[in-house]
Length: 353
Image (cartoon, rainbow, N blue to C red; front, side, top):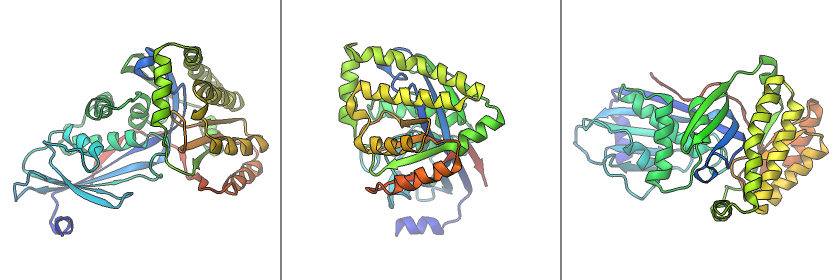
């Protein structure tokens, strides 16, 4: 009843924000503390994560004065922005705590993701960037993109004590095609690439995002990979090779050579397999087999890889081959299916109605 009653009040302000998702991270794994220095080229996609905030007067002087609705999970809960707790959704509670709110305000926040949870498209970073952007806009002191990126990264690494690279937060904030040089973790330089319109349109037309049927569940595998890389064993040579791939991919995109760009995607995918065989799952390989059959020049598991998650395909330039490929992917069953996605030139956006 408390949640319902807040909706009946007259809100003073209504703020919206959105951030794109991330796919096809060439050079992923090199934007981390253990890589020392790294390069990534990734793509922002729509539909974006959406945030809405209604601001009310805190007439009751509530301590727990932020009501959060997670639309995808069907859950609602109150948060004390000065004292985030471990349950529920500590990630969201710590994001809210990062932007100090005036005591006279009470908020109602609605969050929505256009894709299933845990599909390795940087969704958590997009939620974090969009919510931080909305909260800073509400305070009428909008932060610079680099400040939003830094805060979003600190929520994951400092507040939640999790492993996190820097590329997801950057893509969510800047959008488009991001060429990222992490010169000293977590500091990075970002170049938002400008592609020829015909190249952008062709890349957008041929990219397909494929859900692999279940959420990404591979933290244990990732810890094993990190432990091996810390020791600079044989996997380190693979990581060094992955650092070189983004520059090659950048050159191919600027030249409009999508076939060669696809070859870099495939090499990056095989580098991930070399880091640890489990980073490319049997479901991903089943989709890859279909892509090969229909003469797709490129494919890559999104994010760090592992069980579940998603994969992106650069389809053949023949529309008929692409359609037949997607039909055959659906026929694989087990929840494996294409998802609606298109390139997004815009990053974080926040505005008031």
